[in-house]
Image 1 (tube, rainbow, N blue to C red):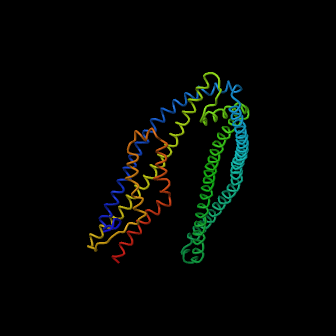
Image 2: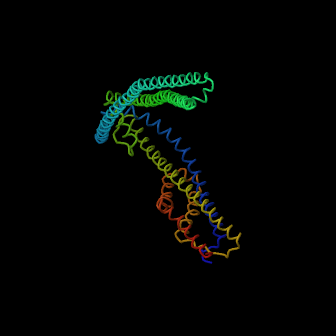
Image 3: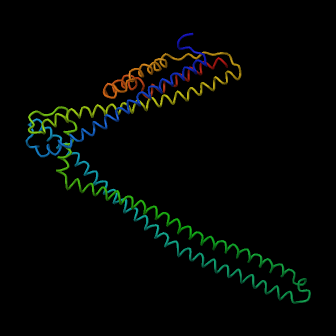
Length: 390
């Protein structure tokens, strides 16, 4: 049988082998991540110490810097000034928007109060009207009752006044019915009022919470705005010097005193810091990609296992799954990649080399569409094989 043509059980075992290879790659790269984190933490502490040494001295000696380096600082400061101006404009607009929204929230809360006050007299009028109807129906019932009592005092009154008795009883029944309906309506009026009060309270509480949250954010924005406006020159200069020091790749020649050697060391440490930042980014990308593929293989293998169970349960004839060449090519990545990253001690001290490996074996070859196509092709291969049972 060809290398990429397998029986169903063999394909099931093959998927498990590939999944294990992916998991092995994940475990190796996770070890490298531990190395990176430990080394980067140590390097970052030393970088921060050197940065802390250079920053105040550069601030104090800025006017003494060599011409080319001074121009670089001036350019960075001009860019930082422009950035600060944009941020100030954005904060001013944000504060204005928030204040307008706070006014709208207050207006909505006042409108709810006004609506409630407007509804109260109307509900009172409805309740008083219903009360008067209840009294009216009670009087009608009482008058009918008294008349019935009078009729009943005559001998055989019930017989001689039968039509009138029947009418009076209807009047009583109608009065009781209308009275009950009026009572129900009055209870509903009172219930409606309680409901309106509750709803108004809930709505105003929600508006009050929004207003308070917005008030806090507005106060924070105003504080930040005031700080940037009042300390504009200082912030621009400090941000410029910070950028220049963080981006320094080669120390400027001709810097006097102990700052010169310190800048040389900081430039060297900048390269180390950036290499580990790049390495940590590559580690995170690789682990995320490998985790996704591993989980996808696990789910797909379960599907193949279900098909294999059906084959055995119903004694279906053997079938062959022809794995596409593109799928086989991707699966060949894992043992090669694992061998290249197995030495986590070496990789831990060569983050840029690791980043190049991740780019070569994973990023360049396994984009989102490639991974989707990888699983789709295996699914289609399985479907083609099972068509033999139809």
